[in-house]
Length: 521
Image (cartoon, rainbow, N blue to C red; front, side, top):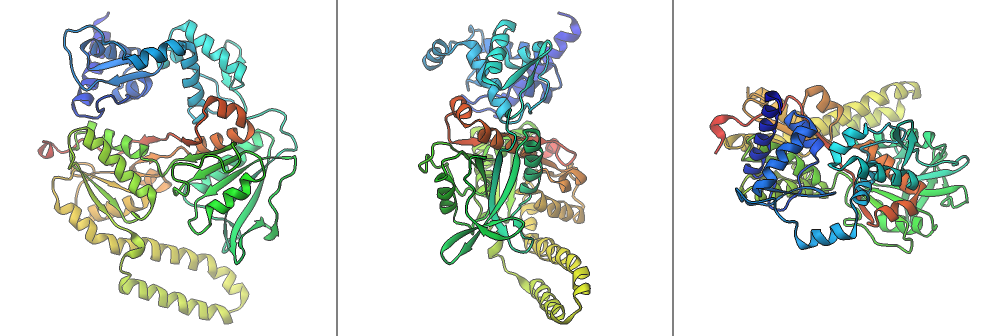
């Protein structure tokens, strides 16, 4: 081995040891893939694999073929490579290496790591990434070709399109009705989701119909968009399945899902708010699958591990929306990782429920202005109203959302700043991160020199302000839901679980950095 390569392996080994020593990976926890670890350490996958093999020989890590690396939670210097426990041995005997590899690649395809029509990496690179031999990898890839997930492309492979021969077929997207805009209720994640969904339906030669749900005295009523005409749920042979945006607490989700399930077609639910926390098993239709992104604790766990690698032993979690399940799950994920790292007091929670905050005089002034505008609107010429409406809507959103939240969060920021041991602020959304950054700039607090700032959503605001933020991988969610609708039996055979979590990624930007030396324990 050349001196340069040996130095790279030493650096990768030191990186792994620091992460283990910092408690980033608790006892028996699974490490990220070799590819992900190599990217974080700035080395090749092969270099990271050699470094991991060294540490495995000491007992700090153990490698389970086909599954990855696991932290043992103890060191055994000078001992041989640790034995795989009985459960792992049974698993190893029951499932061959190529089958496990095929399952891992299939999961990566279904969660958006590889997208339809994409050329797969070179076989050598895939072998390093999944830590398998060339022969095992080839057999796994050919199995995925037989399953319809991959297609041969010259000397390599491509991800197969969603489905062939779908001409004339339709997918129905169901969501809560937004009366003001005569459209579906769309949150921050739903608008890009809808754009990607339309694009993927176009690739798959599928038509996309929109159906809105509104509450009436008899229960719920369906409206065809954009006509707003009441309608029955489309159930013809050309309908291959339904997608449901579960993002509005005012809509009785159980009633809607019973209605969709009764049609006897596949149903994919994007549950953004925890409407079906834990999933629902059948609803008299086994072809139902729930997909979650924002309400999982997994994103917060990744944020916590990242901050621990930077030396942040005490962090603050700031949320004015703690009445929502996704806010509570993020706090839970942060605390789980810090507890496993041996710092049970590492997360200082400053979480409140925004709707319960005192409105104050500022709110009264906004409401007075809006009431005056409504009175003027009744008598003003329609052409003037048409020109003014977009500006008033934008002003209302800015004043009520940005201005009022800034006013209400200021005492929270004061409290957090007073605790000088807190070296990183984790805000529940990018919107709150903008307010936090504005506050810190006003106080002449350096970001990230004094305080690191990390958030969730990876919105355009975070991109422009260079704020480290968790991206929920909306394209992967859209493709995963649509793939289930087009091939439900194949998807349930590959993964029988009714609740699927879409993996995202943490986008690292200039707002986060190493903890100040004086603040480290």
